[in-house]
Image (cartoon, rainbow, N blue to C red; front, side, top):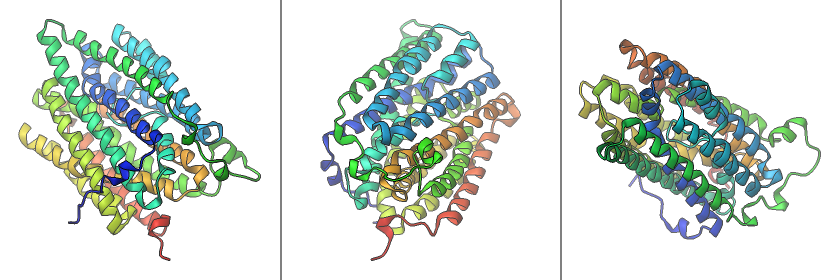
Length: 428
């Protein structure tokens, strides 16, 4: 059948480092999942307006961008393991521990801004920070080109399942804590302390990576380097990477209007949905998203990586536009879940395409630069989404803007890169 799932035999070929990287991905995404459900609700509960929340989320994503740009563009030269550990330290001390503790102990807006900017916080429920690009580069060199997309699909499924479980656990835990006598704010703060603890687990896992996760010496760039390559780790492929980055930034800018935490807030405003039900909604949504990412490998093997990115993304965005047009909660949830059932098919294909069209010693940098572009794009829109959500008459506008801009991105991507094919899709 057309949507045949990739065979799990590729997972049996993973090295010990590969399995460890799956574990670090799941640890992060579990924490991101429960944080996304409660973050905006918590900020609203402590008295922040929707516009101030939007500013705070924007600064959060900008802070993640600066950390990612520095770490990912030097990882292949300085060492992937070393930079992952540096990122974990930043997440633990400056990010999860510092920002999480501040979020959990004060409602002072200036301190919240400082904490959010320095730390690594995911208001979307999706990956932020420097870890994903470096992990992708390490995973890509452990398997063949033909198996790369399948491994990325399973890697994304693992993350989606962890996010889904985190969202479910977060919503249920808040409900249980409030039922046990804690106030709503105290319940949210408990989850923020748990988010800090997740940073310590991640740091300990990265300590176990072996030297085999590094770029092989034979594949490191030789010869004279330019200022650009010395600063950003790119040389031959910088034109491709910069064009991809511009388009990915547009896609992420559109997605920033409908961050999971923002969508959760919208359901709360529009239909009065409580945290436990919100957790269940996003549990189902992330399960479907993970399965859609897994199915992407089977589709890509038939029609190609770029075609899969575009063909599956357009209907997903049309469904996104339909969500606020639904007259009641059950229909809105149904359309949202339908959207998530195909929404992530472009993710493993996009990741696989990015590392496939660059040289081996550019993989971490390419994934990092494009990832930073996405984070930057996503950082710009929450401030506008917050202003829109503050006006009851404009509650639906973020969905329309997100869906429309994403369709524009799909068309531009196909037009710009239809002639750029990864090695496994080239004829003999």
